[in-house]
Image 1 (cartoon, helix red, strand yellow):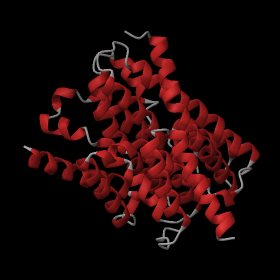
Image 2 (cartoon, rainbow over the protein chains, first blue to last red; image 1 turned 45 degrees about the vertical axis):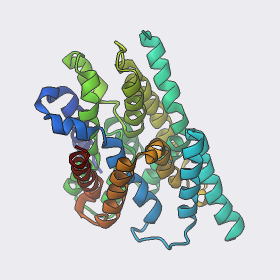
Image 3 (cartoon, chains in turn yellow, cyan; image 1 turned 180 degrees about the vertical axis):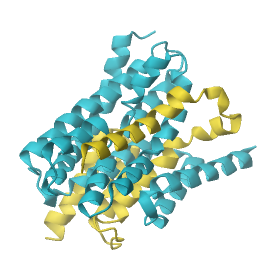
Length: 105
Length: 228
């Protein structure tokens, strides 16, 4: 790993952040696109959530009885009703730990 | 009308709960770099220059696995291409800023900061200095990310691996989207994205991270057409 490769990766990343904010004017986007942009959070974040739950560190699918699935379900339920970020994350982690350290131990 | 300081503070408060997952992930990220045998200074330089959690880990893993620099750099670019979508959404609220301010603020646009600031923007369209909220979320993420990765580099993985704290990352994003489960169209879009990400997980250069949102947005546009 060289400093040059990090700088290239950094410039590329910066362009992904900056292009739509500073270089492209909003008028260049059509009305249809603007409406669809409303869905960006729902259309992007599951691509981080699903692999984070269903795929392990080695790139393979987990078993259907994996504690992560249970932890994620608990997090969804707690998050839905509590509307609280800390409660959602904690509930998911604690239920996951409960299964790996207490039940499956 | 809220003052700049109030908006900035509000941004800090809105993003803070996410530190519960961001800080352990940052520590892991720093520790992995050193464990894989890379120069600690270079590992830290990534946090400053790239400033993108998952892409930093992928960069390290690819290089330590013998991939060429070109492959590693391109992968980082593709993983982070999702920021183009965030920028397209945020541009509506940042339009009035000067070019220089747009260039500066872009550096701190990250997943969680985008998500929380976008939620705030939608509810407070009339505010004049909205971008201070984004500066608040972005700077909080930046400071915590620097401290966390640096701690991981210096102290190694003092967070026990058995705790599986990487799992906190999907949980953080569950907390972000969970309220949208009330809307059927959003549920369909989320499931489309999630299933596509699993289907295309092995696509080259980690491109599932941009392919699946594009498929999901296409489905969203079809849903819009049905509504009319």
